[in-house]
Image (cartoon, rainbow over the protein chains, first blue to last red):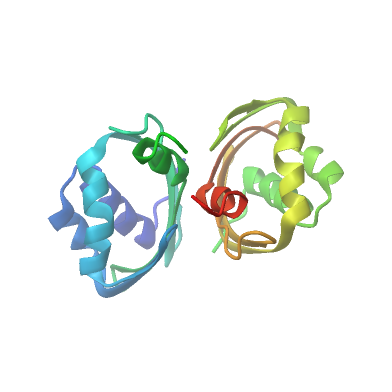
Amino acid sequence: MSSSSPALDVAMAYYNAWTSQDMDLAMSYFADDVVCDAPAGRIEGTAAYRDFLGPFTQILQSAELIAAFGDDTKAVLIYDTRTLPVDSAPGAECLTVTNGKIVYNRFIFDRLPFEQARNPAN
Amino acid sequence: MSSSSPALDVAMAYYNAWTSQDMDLAMSYFADDVVCDAPAGRIEGTAAYRDFLGPFTQILQSAELIAAFGDDTKAVLIYDTRTLPVDSAPGAECLTVTNGKIVYNRFIFDRLPFEQARNPAN
């Protein structure tokens, strides 16, 4: 399901760190000026990225990798997560790696079940 | 950004077909008993899959492939789409291919902006 690559090695190290709720280690794989296009909009810099992903790791119960591919500069991770509010919350990340650091991430997941968990009336 | 593979060849043919709004051609790449885990739940069989994806192609204005990887049996596509209700609606598909046909797809996208476009009050 995966073929090793320089970008994938970094992506997997990041994935293993954040799914283990080790945000210090996870953030060590990012360039300081990382840009992430996430469902709610663009995130710039490691502090903002940590504010985005850190709270999610607090509600994360388990993660299961579905697919991981990469080449020299780009890696894709597809996974499912079980979280406190949402039983199955899959995600996709497409990471660009330069000089061993993640410089860009396109992050895709469905916000709707989280929104519904917050506002059951909707 | 991509490395050729048997699964990726089928995935790309399917992607090129549906993003060209050719649902007849797109569906020709699926096994009759395809299973798709989509944000709203499980879809089973080609008729249900067509009912799921066909309406989306009607609001599709353009699609841009971001990443495509695959091996013998699995392919991953990451792309952005521009649609009538939502300017940027990225998607991720993780397709399993057996005997030249797509037998399974894990389909990830954010339903929230489409829900908000339908119900602006939310």
